[in-house]
Length: 279
Ligand SMILES: Nc1nc2c(c(=O)[nH]1)N[C@H]1C(S)=C(S)[C@@H](COP(=O)(O)O)O[C@H]1N2
Ligand SMILES: [Mo]
Image (cartoon, rainbow, N blue to C red; front, side):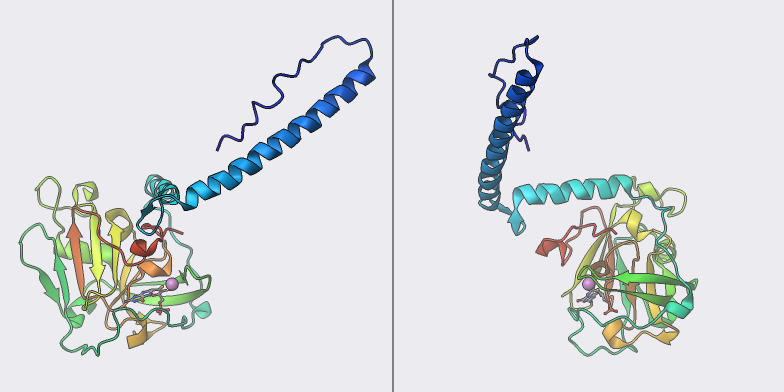
């Protein structure tokens, strides 16, 4: 915001080369004081007016649009500075414990892990979805990590997770590409469609991921927490864990994964949180 700092007191003539330096100094001090009052007044007025202006702006996705612009600027930084090789910190397994169960959206229905299947759509080879039982997911390369789950509400917990990297599932499935050429997840990730949507079986909770974040080496689909099969409240039979982002993105009880050209809806982004939710 322009504070008007350059403008006040520009009119006051400052006589150079005054005979009495002390008087000159006092005059400057008085002028400075007057100027800072003026500046303070302008800033305060601009502040009040600015705030009024801000809170009366048209709303964009639930918040005044100037704030939305700030969020979008943050998102731009998130995109520009997100480095796929930047890893979230890992910890000794001994520090791992059960996190507070938080957020039960999309977990209301009873779920039969025996009949549950993961559906994956938006594939290069076929318009039909691929579907996996939990045993088929378990047969994919196993990956484990001990990372911190950080809730946007301010608590965090170190957890030991086991499952499969999202990138290994992507390699297995073959996401659609922009060029129409066959996908090569490792060699040409930039040719893959730029987003993935992950949803609960009932569609009540859903997260959108940019492909770079989805393919991050610590983004994983988990079926075990701290050496035990994942419990229902923590997202059985399969949940996402993405430690480079706040917990809101670590969706529990995944039903479908959809690769897509278009930025997917995201449950908490629709309610005013940053779509990237990066840490
Ligand atoms: N399906 C679903 N997944 C969810 C949520 C939710 O409400 N529904 N809440 C999220 C939030 S805000 C957090 S902090 C983590 C918490 O994971 P936990 O319950 O295993 O500790 O789950 C995330 N995944
Ligand atoms: Mo959270």
